[in-house]
Image (cartoon, rainbow, N blue to C red; front, side, top):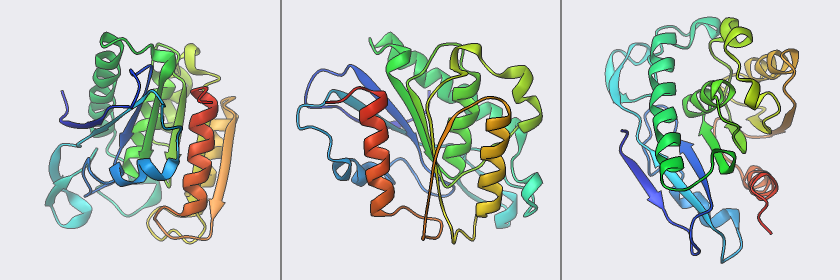
Length: 221
């Protein structure tokens, strides 16, 4: 199982957010953001931050770093190494099973991710056989598009999806994110979409939108 940083809630956990970092970052990346979500002081949400495995990343000259999959080309339509995406999907599915074994119902689990991590959040949630609470897809895009129709799980056809993106993102162009949104909508998914005047990063307004989304889908008063 993936190595993780886990933040236990003030009250006994009844929900969980599994949050995947971006390329070259690690499990610590989004830990400091959690207090900024301003959840109630007695909330019961466990936050799990997995470390991606280390691997050589082709587009970065073969440099070894934490990555959810290899990126072999700068071309937008060839970004994701499908075999690597599916390996990471299996690893996150294992983390979901671990949380269910610890007493968290699948429909109380949110998958969240930034950039590469968002790819895996979408990939895993849309194909997961048990209904999940929601998906938070930050500055990211949809991989394995051609197989989604055949592989989509009926249980998550109406899973709430939050997609956000920076209008000035030089890493994952806004056009690619919007194309991913359109493809998801073609398959019948309903997307809550926000864009901000930022690059490939996170801003305060975005954090407020993430907080509101989590409070809604996890029914946090």
